[in-house]
Image 1: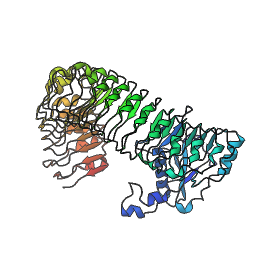
Image 2: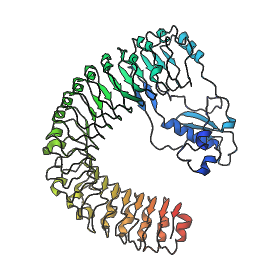
Image 3: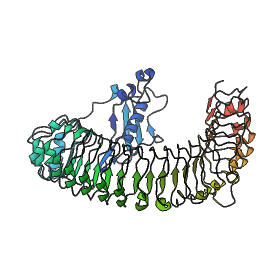
Image 4: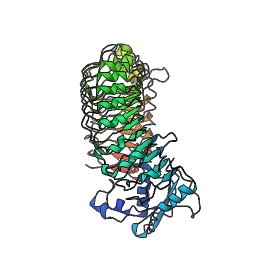
Length: 621
């Protein structure tokens, strides 16, 4: 079931158009873009309303129910742009009553509140009639705005298997009326205002029920006993409530396969009886306040997904090693001080993430036994040395994150077998040197982050990182010399030719090598907060460069070749206190959008730059 599937927009004005009143949301200042007093009192234009509506639809979570009964949630989080057609609107048309626009194949009409037609109320009777006439196996009451259900609404509906009541204002279900749904398999009640007292005892009479979705409601404290009586239940989804405890009666749900209780208020340990859920494959207890897990959890040997992140766990039961079917184990953001050795038996794990705990070491050879692990994250712990283990322990790893620890050195051979690693993050440690011998084994690296360490020099062998696309070295102690291999790109095809991002911010660099102009794929260069006085003329060869940050240096002049950077979009020269002139050739950069010369003692900006150059000049003496 796809809730956003619609027919393509046509040319006829007779097509169905959804009308929304968002004037209160936009003009009232509920959006983060309209928080100022001035904007909160302005009149909401139809066009602004249309943009707001499309953005809300684009970003909201959508729930999908598959044929097998599985429920998934999808949401869009990327920035939104509106290049599509907007009908009936011009910048001068602020007086228009409505704006029609297309977004993602869906057609909207936005209007100021005073012009909106009265919204047509959903017809419960019509949906009931449709269901009975078609002998349909589903009943669709989602987003009907229902505060209560009419008496007798579920009478004589033996063919209904799925009941959609999500997105309403229900505080509960009517007692004594669920008997008309003897074959109901899926009951979707998410996004209501249901309280525990609103779930009647006769809910337990739905003996065929397999899926119960109660996320985003107002359940608090203990769950009502009727839920624990649904012995045929396979999926129980309780996210985003205030449930404080799971009772021993959880053992009654013998057929349960998926239990999701994330983002609640559970503080006590999970009951020992959870070990009796022999068919459980997915357990999500994340975002609670759980301090301990029962040893009986190790009896749930069918578990493939175990989510325990964002709790207060200080240790894991040794029995966790019995969960040999685990593919995903999320432990980040807890208080763990140790990892049990038995976890090495979980050889099917594809990710091992213990970010933001209190770990200073790991059991020897733990990772070496986890031959399926592809992503390893030790970030934000108390490691001062690399975890023990042989040099083959990272052989199958593709992403290794050890940032924000206290590591002082990378021991010889510790990272000599990174054959498949494409991302290595060692940021924010205390590393002063790199072993050149290891770097020959890093040839598949795409991202390397060594920022915020104590590096004062780099080995020449860094030039062998032929696949490198992102290289971050900010906040170190690098001085004027950058290694020769980095200054002159080797004749071997591909070496450093892929580099797109180079971050050298906040070092002690006094100059850049002329060979920097050979980094022909470079798109983002940050050399801010150094001691640079100028750039080599070869800088003009960086025709793919889009963002160039060179603020807070000692730059006195810019080479005229800088006008050859045809792709330059953002150029930051702020806080160069000896920069008196900008070459007129900079106006030859056709895409230049931002030129920041803030706090530079410029005598004047060349007229070609002012009249035909950047669209925005940030300038203040």
